[in-house]
Length: 437
Image (cartoon, rainbow, N blue to C red; front, side, top):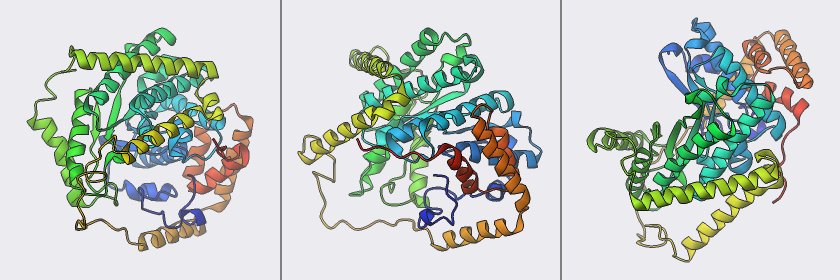
């Protein structure tokens, strides 16, 4: 959300949901001794993605690694933040401009980098149906492409680096159908709506994570079974990469024991089951083909409604996808409470007085140490240089026409903090406040 670790709103959050990165100094520490041209790095960052990515690029500079040799992904998907996850900073239009700037900068300077991971995962975690996850995610992709084209980008210059990120929930066949439909719909969108020339532009490349929202605090060892089934669905549906959640997902960050079980789940699927030996192994099943066609049909119907509203940004401003997800979440919860949907260990097959499991606790000293680090940085850096780069950043943002990446990179090189850079942009763009729906 673009706040430094010593900001009052950060209290109690530092180090709890990922490593704290306040400045280039933290990114240098994080990747010390790790050659960036020999790894691929995925960063789950959205509203401040341009800044976090810039820190990574500067660390590569310091290592003498050419940006053209860097591989990885930034999530950088702000639309799903407005729809579901709610960790936004700026209003939609300047946020979209920053994302398109990363497309343009990446295609020219960091060609192996995936400059966005268009994410349905968080939409599903907020309570959407599988169909809503599919439709809103793919339409977010359409919206990003249209904004990029309006900024003058050629589709085949950036579309091959678009990537997607889906959820894997409990309904095995529905999830497989969702992934199959996604590939079919995206190919048609890219070839018929956008008329791409490069075949790679029409390929739907996606990562899948098992559903955190499907896991239970009650009888948490049952979650091992749930994760295995969800991961199986993702592989049978053709995912390119996979994250299996830990059994203690609903309780805390994973213990080493729980994380190892999650890793072994993937390894057993990969090496012992034979499910990776063929592509689309369930093709031709009447049931699954029917489900896939129904998913496609529903997806196109949502597209028609979103087109009529003027696109996803306009739909978000009207509250349409937010209401759709809220209503779906409400109906799902009602079904659980009325026992129309059974969740083992929650509303049936309950165990009374079950013993607690070991969970991981993050020591509060982590926050204190990080706050001290960022304060020491502000005292020891060249603050005149910081001020100069922040002023140039603000002036560039006011023009609303230049690519912001070079100005953000200069701020990062001067050791301006994440919060300082975001505050400068807040002063120009403002902050987004969601209306009541």
